[in-house]
Amino acid sequence: MSIRKELINLLEDQKITAEKLNAILLYFGFIDSQLYTLEKIGEELGVTKQAVTAMISRKLISKQTLSLKIKINEFIGIVDSKNYWSINNLEEEMEIAMLINEDEFNITGIFLLIDKLGIKTNSKLCNINLDEQARNHDGSNRTEYIISKDFLETIKQKFNKALRLQGKCGIANLEYIKEYLGADYSLIKELLLKQPKLWTSGNLEDDTFYYLLENRESTIINYHKLVFKIIDRVNPEYLSELYHNAMFAGKKAEKRKEYTIPPKDVIQQYFESSKYFNNLNGMIIYTGDKKELSETNRLIVSFFNKTKTEVTFREIKDYLLESGISEDRINQMVTHSPIIYKNTSPGRKNYLYSLVSNNFPDHNNLELIDDFAEDTNELLQKISKNGTDKDTTTLRRLEHPALEKYLTKLYKNGLFSCCAICKKEFATTKEWIVAHKFKRKDCSDDIRTDVNIVMPLCIYGCDPLYEKGFIVINGNTGIVTTGERSNLSDYGNEYIDRIIGKKIDPIWMRGKSPTYFKEKFDEVNEKIKQSSK
Image 1 (cartoon, rainbow, N blue to C red):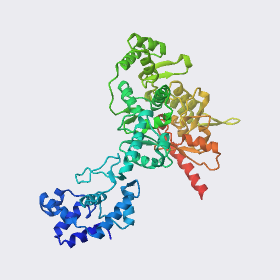
Image 2: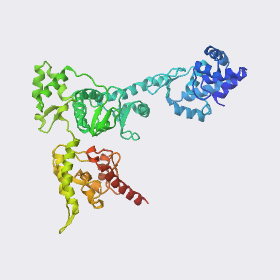
Image 3: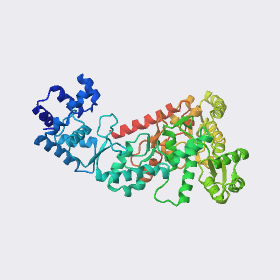
């Protein structure tokens, strides 16, 4: 027999009225699993709050029956058998033990009943932040866990360490403190995933995920508040490199080894998917709060606004020393700053520095792209009049030189600098191929002479992988996804795993590109279906 039924038997033995019985059952959540306030019960029954208080007198349930005591003790015994319970798991266990009936109970209400009966328990009702919840009806109760008093302090310490981790490494990973968390790792992960304003990246199932609580302080959020006080938009790939370098310098200086800063691709994923950023033509705009610049940062901004160019470390240092900034402070501000871009190409002792607002590349200068596309299209239209293939001793692709010239113009004008798929930077035009988004042999002349049919793919793997259908691009999202991968070597699968999930830049989604990618996507998936039959 359930706790609810035992309580009803107890109250009926005291020959109370049906009205009083309903008031008590409503109060403890035994009608529809809701906890009703005294006022709400009064409204339901058409009586005053004071009248309801009189009905729910402790005297009514002070004379417990032995059978009710047994049920209550059985309930407490199950609760005390573990260090903690989630509400859902506890409800399942209580249903198995037949202590509760579906939709006719409330766990907080049962604990409230236990208190009314004067029975002591060793458990605390807690929310997802491990704050203790009052056993009341004020509407603020958000009980998610039942935790033993002895265990609560220990798990709080571990949970707080997980929360504070992002303050050290920007975007956190529980793997950094897995050994410290020990057997409580799963509970801490569960608590984290229930937090509001949580950003995650990676596989939540195999515990390789990164996380950031965007309503708490962290290194990376402090960077946003500073950087976007100076600029209003920036290329996410560029900014991820800037943040990564600043965090790496800070970690190295403080000699902290207990954690690893997040990879650049994880930082970029955060920029591109966080609710605090808007993406406009491939540029990100931060929508959160910004903070005022410190005196030193104002001096740095002023200095770079005057120079309008890259400078050496000595030039910045001399300027700041003259302004009264200490040498130690200068070293920290320049090498660890997210607002200063460090150009390492001249070599270790010759690094050049520039302000973030003076250095981000405009990868999506649409007007310039349109100009190049218009020039190229004029040439392509002339070619298409007589057909795009010419039979000499071999078949020539007449449109190819024009398309190659088009991509080369974009590259040399800084409108792209990396492989469209893996995002690896190019050092020369010899490192990329003019790749078709859909098979050229299946394209009409009109499509062959569309500048948007091509994209630059690296010669180190992406071009053959895409051409052979081992990877494809989702035409709706621009995200790289897996294709036909059967019988590949471990090396091939490892390479593909590294690029799956990357998102191509908006420049390669222009015009009819989504349709071209869809054609390729559908073709490969049809082959996969056929091979699986």
